[in-house]
Image (cartoon, rainbow, N blue to C red):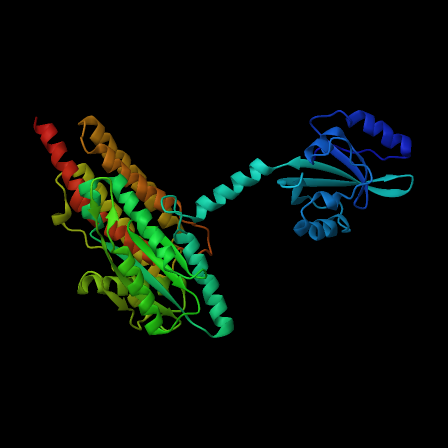
Length: 435
């Protein structure tokens, strides 16, 4: 609480209080009869861009019109103490700022007055807004991330239950992205992902949502669109847009795309099931060939749960410490799959996966540093990206994470990473030890 206001017995008490805080630069204080200001100190006047004084001015007139009714109702409420309000205030004709108004009730000559403390919270407001944006958006492309996309699907499902109109989800994965990333570097790969994201957004309605789920995998929500021909046309248009050449500094590159589509409620009635059904259709499209679009087929919920990951000696890279940790990580992914199948709480397992993944990456990075590995920078960047993806997920109870889809993504990532970057690292470590 900014300041305790004593009982005010008379107008002279107001004058005494005014003298006490009039020149304060730390406390912006005003006294009001209802919303009409009786007194405002210098700090309060300067805050609102009126250093000459604010006597007999309505507090609500200092706020933008959209906030006046809400704040006025709060100030007139019977709550004790009155609620703290956050609003947008005017400072001149075009300048606005975010202000927090904290109130206390006082009496003076049997009149009920409000002591109003004001604080400019614009910087805090912007920081919180930015943190909220980062929590729900992909930092590379600016698209919604997995958590926001799952929330948008939940909203679409609630609307569908009210209106009876279904909706569609498209899963889209780039073909040939790894080759571009390997040949031109991660900066070029990031540029490709940003360009694809822009093209996806450009090809959608304002009501649609495009999201990046991680790596080179995107998803699109089409509210109120469950007509197969129409959804297929959208998916084919997005696949075509993603497949157009992308200019890099030295050359043009081209990546393809494949897509899978699922419809609510035809193929599933929960977020996880719907995304898993669309994801299964995507994998069917990739098996059929590049540039394909496939529809999900009706399936039992358990049939959309990712399969257990079979770990064999063929996946070993030849470094016992690394191989042991890979096998442990595969075991944790399978533990998560079993929990999903059995309807058990998966949150702590997911947290354990994040912790062990970070531990494993730290092990590899320690070994890279010890042997002065030339590919350390790009390898560590792969680690950072995956951990950023994992840590961006919301793990609160009752919040759907599309865990089945995330599990499939982790399984695929681990297999690709082991068979590519980790085999190269293991060869360098063996050479260093032999030397």
